[in-house]
Length: 299
Image 1 (tube, rainbow, N blue to C red):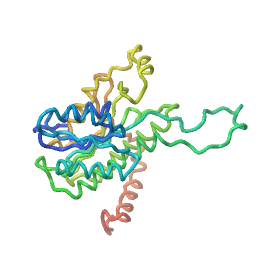
Image 2 (image 1 turned 180 degrees about the vertical axis):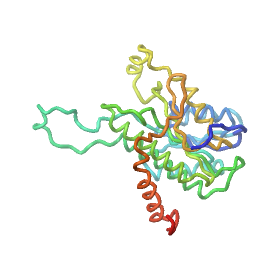
Image 3 (image 1 turned 135 degrees about the horizontal axis):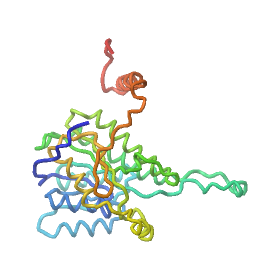
Image 4 (image 1 turned 180 degrees about the horizontal axis):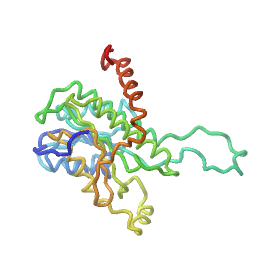
């Protein structure tokens, strides 16, 4: 939706709120942010791991990172983490909705030969709760915080970044909850970016292919590595997050990474011309109902 100029100024003194910060993308991102002079509120359900990382960053005399235990599926725990961050650092310029887990089986394996001997069970939606609802809690927190704080030295109230995946675009028959979550994150990002455009807020996503993180087992990663399928560099992924911070005006980007290749994944415009008038009117009418704008006779 916006240009891809990237940030051209120092980030030193800015403050970030990172979920899933004890390992994987969250840890690598937190480490890079600290290197760039950003203070970081490190949020993770793994309190010990998160605290260890924060101590690693706080080796000097200044506190540059605090660790807060929070389950991102809990709004109250995320809000409490935010309050601790503001108490420590004054404000939050960047929210990274990053915490996630891999696919958890939501239904028993399909097997008609044994189905009659098993009860019909409630689905397990853990993956959806962490990868979609948890990230939306972070997003809801960010957008309401931005609404309440003044523009910073970069000219923004704040920036929201969401960790998506190539599975935001592609399907996987054995990961229905993960793909549903990541597709949801993509569409939320694009919708929110459009809604908040021009309000001092940007919303972007970064969607990498498979990375060797705690989201999977070491044994599983060895299978991918042996086949040359685990080649996306973590530092390349982190650089994409960093590129839209500071004074960057980029908004609504689905920044995607596979191996050494980076691209902005396009919006699917299949049959848009035939559907656009109805979709535009639905956006307009819903905006009236939710208080974003008032009815115009020429609409």
